[in-house]
Image: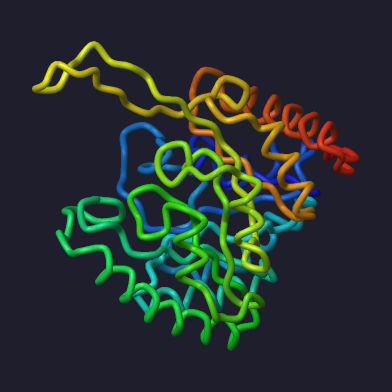
Length: 303
């Protein structure tokens, strides 16, 4: 098992700093965030993230991405792309970039739910069956282009989208070649929407289980009440050891289905400073994985 960090969760670091610091802590790899983003006065996860490579001009950045990654002694666990499946031009570009880098796999976003503003300014209001059918049609094209480039396109289990659960993702990809399409099972996202007991969910995905993201979350009761007087709850990101999901139980489920590939951390909690957070997360997941029976011999930190 190998561990990497998705740079959406390292907004304060430049690409050089992210690669150097993660390598020094002993991480095996890195998953670069690739998207055009809004500017911000201060670095943030989703805007002004300094460890993000712009989609605009991506092709020109490929040599620098490759150099920084290789010089740090890191591998690619994949690319954290944001191109949506209905944007065929950008999907093909990010698939080509993945191939050029030797990164092997890249996230290709599915369509958001009709009542969600995920990935767009306003909800479309379109019904789920229509959105699901459209996503399937687009993903058939995505699968063909991924095969052309010799890489794998990944569907992430994500709240607010047509694939919030393992069941929906398996149904979306059924019949497509698992050599070129797969699923990112994301423990933290599933606490918000789409939760299914991890072991049967991982078993259900079968050959489509391609990648794993780990973060944690919790639901918090607010002081507000709705019009009926009922309590109002909201979700928030939490440190790995403080959220509602058991990371140890999750690793044991991964072990039972024989998954022994990349685990990518994307911790959006902010209780600890970034450098302390990434270092403590690596120690935590190594311990959980070892207790679950995985071989987690530590990588030698960069000198």
